[in-house]
Structures are given as C-alpha cells and as structure tokens.
Image (cartoon, rainbow, N blue to C red; front, side, top):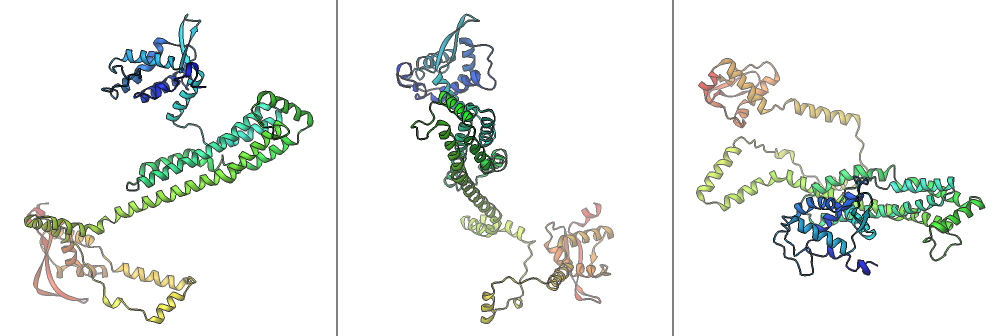
Length: 480
C-alpha cells in the first residue's frame, strides 16, 4: 500500500544523502504536532512550519556543506547555505511523497499542514527511537491484570481488548530487555580491550529506574496467579453476560479468532491472553534473567581485571625501568639510574629467616591432602592467635614516628643529640633507641643524619655503637 498512488515514493526522502537531516526534521515536526508540548489550539501554517524547520536546518548546515547530491535527489542539489530554499524544497518533497498533507483552516482562512496517517506512524517511530524512555518498564503486567478485573466487573469487551493488548506488550517488553542485554554483551566482546565503565554505569542507572521495578512490583511471576484466577472467573460468568461479551467482541474485534479455531471469540481471546502470560513467565522472563546474569558476570570480570592490572602496575616497575635503561645511551642511563637510586635509597630491605622455612615430610603432605573436613577453631586457638598478633604488634614501631620524635628532641635541645643521651624509661623508649639509626636512614625527608662515634652505648638493655644525631642543615633548622 505504501508504493501505490500518492505513496509510490514514500521512503524517497529517507533514501538520499541528507536522510539524517530529513529524519531530524520529521522528529521535530512530530514533537510540534503530537508531542507532549504540542499546541493544539492553532494549526500549523506554512510560516509556522518554516519556523519549526529552521533550527534543524541551522544545526545540520555545517554537516551538509560541500555535499553533491544525485540528480534525482531534490534536496541534494540545493545549496545548504540558503536555509529558506532548503526549507521550501523539504516541504515540497514531504508533500509530494505522502508524508504531509494540506487542509483548509476555517478559522484563519489559510492552508494548514498536518501529517498523513502513514506519515504520522513513521514519524512517531523515528521520534520514539530518539526519545528517552520515561515510563516504567513492565507496567503492562499490572495493566493486563487490572483490565481483566474491569472486564469481569463491568462486563465490557473494550476492557478485554485492552487486556489483550497489554498481554502482547508484556512479551515485547521482556524481549526488548533480552535484546538490550545481548547488545551490551556484544559490545563487551568487541571492545574487551577497553574497560566498559560508561556502559556499566548506564546499566546500573537503568537497573535502578526500570529493571528494579520489573523484578519486584511489576514482576510477571507475581501477577501470574491473579491473572489466571480472573480468566477462570470470566470463563464461568453467566450465560447472558457471556453472550453480551461475545456480541461486543464480534463488533469491535473483527480481527480476533481469524481462523475460527475456538467456538467463540471470547474463549479464543482468553486463551490467547493466558498463553501469552504463561509464555512470558516460562520463557521470556527466564531469558531476561539469564541475559542479565551473563552481562553482569562478564562486565564484572572485565572490571576486576582492569582493577587488578591497575593495582599490579607497581609490581612491574622494575621490569619497565630495566627496559627503559636498555633503550637509552650511556649518559642517559647514568642519569636515569641516579634518579632511581635516589628513590630507592630510603627503601627497607628485610630478609626472611631461613629457619622459618621447613620442608614437610611425605607423611605430613599426605595427611594434609587427605583432610576434607574443615577443622573447627576452638576458643583457646583463637585466644592464642590474638595474643600472638598483640605481641607482634607491641614491638613494631613506625620509622616515620621515630623520625618525628627525633626531630622534636633536636628542636627542643637546639643542638646535636647523642644516641646514648636519649631517655630510656619504658620499653617503647628502648625500642625507639634501638631503631633510631634505621629510621633516620630510611626517612624520605632526608633532613636528619646520624654520624657514628668511636664510643660505645651501653645500658641495662643492650650494647651498641653510639651515634650523634643532628639536622643536615643545622643553622636553618635552628632559626626555624
């Protein structure tokens, strides 16, 4: 029907080089004539039509510069810099190919414009594709249930037809969700080298707005039994009400029961509603959950890999440094190694005690492998582990804290300090004195130095070499 009479070239405006521009104009026209903000108090005259098209022409004018259209493309051969001429050509093309039609405006006694019926249907499709979804998904399940209840109470065939339409949309909503997750998985696989942060955040936002309700309040499984019971009650209504519904359905739903498979149109429609709801519960809803699960698992694995790679970069710094040194010349190698040495000078290197490594005997290994039941942790073992952690933490002091304490001591005395003169009153003081030289050498600030003296440090706890501790830039620090 779209290729006969006035619709013989219906899709021609959308097949030229400027089809994107034409689609944008159709969306804008539909928004003006039938969108949420449409003004129904006045018809669309030619001047108003040009005003609607002008912003779209100005937006796409830069993209259309330099385009050379085909001879049979009316819009392609027009200079995009002439907005008025392009708007007139577009209006003529839409009128000629059956998208728009004119009618007489009796109020203003002028010619007005509107969409033809097929033009409105296709423009609505283009407008819907570019418009953000605003309604809650899967609300059709409740719509089907409520329409069936209304049909039973009011004995109205129009409510029954509404329930049939809602049941069809239940399937389409679930299928749309499955396609959405399958598309996300395809994009994940094609762009696996790039962490899908944007897509994943978009999914989380959409889940909160749409899919969360679909899994809870609008869950098809939740309303399944209620729909079954209402359909059963409709099948058991009185004979007079049954005949009234049947007669109404034959008048308003001539498309129903096309092959007369059922004895009555009412029975056929109730069977079809029940079949669609059952199919949504047994087939489409599990498919949606499976598709969502596949996407979440794959997206989570990619995100975890990206986080592991990001956190593990520091482990490969030595390999990268070696590769950088190998690519440089001698002078550049020396400078790079000097910089690396300055950074590594404050690093602490601690070697594990070889006595802590003990090989298990063959019998111990076999016994460990044979254990299948996880042992229960007793109260005594937990207490022993807690005591061990407390003992280990009691003798662990931070080098940074020790260095800060030495700085305070030097500023207080305002002169160099010998290690043997530091106060030793508590166990923490003893550990601090024993670890002071190590803390000074590992300090990143590098503002303190420790000079070894010829004398010895001897007290009741330990004996070692004595050191003189002072600021490297002593005059500046004294003034500070």
